Image (tube, rainbow, N blue to C red; front, side, top):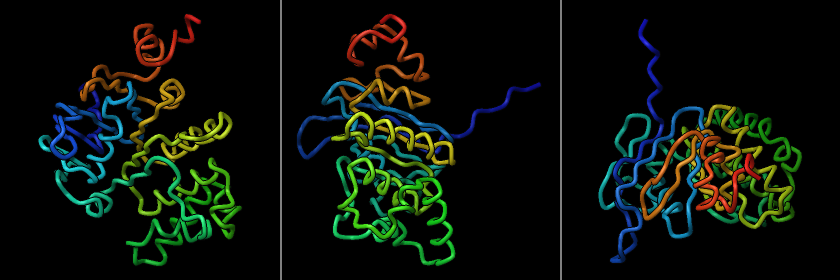
Amino acid sequence: MASELAPEPLLRLTDIQAGYGRAALVLRGLSVTVAPGSVVCLVGPNGAGKSTVLKVASGLLRPRAGQVVVDGVDVTGRTPQQLLAAGLSHVPQGHSVFPEMTVAENVLLGAYTVRDRAEIAARTDFVTELFPLVGERWSALAGALSGGQQKQVEFARSLMVRPKVVLLDEPSMGLDPKATAVVFEQVQRMRDAGTAVLLVEQNARRALESADVGCVLDLGRVHITGPAPDLLADPRLAQLYLGGRPKEAA
């Protein structure tokens, strides 16, 4: 009996070369894939090009060479608006809520390209069920929420267009350990609800604990890739990239 074929990746970056202005290349032949129903985490030292990968994937930075494919369609060089329509939603570093607007207004901004009111209502029900705090604070000013709560609002907003893949750039930046734990729980909730995630995170160990696949970047390329638990257990990676020995050796 023939073995079952692996599903086609929702996002494929192949041999990407990219940089800023006339400076040297940041990405030098990088390749990454994101399968349906998975969380893929990019880790590595500062300057390895992790955030640049997300900028290329979301159209904020046009690659000098290579290919970006979303669900089988070549979208290389398209604008951020076109890539959003293709199914890529980008949550940038830091806090991107509008503090003087309500949680509801912030979330509904994510559906500004959707014209079907029934679809907007359905997506609103979906995100408030997925992130109960968003529904509980629906009428509150977003600026009155804590950093971790604001991040949930950003996640909810990113899902309002039914993206195929959500791109998360340093979602735990500036958060305390408790809020960080909640954020990574929400990342897994997004995955479990059917949205794939490509994640960049400086807290490499915590991110890999929540991911399915890990990719270690170095000098603009993927140096090592594999199941996230395997990377966590590899003593070489623990010393080089993860800030100490693996848990099993501690």
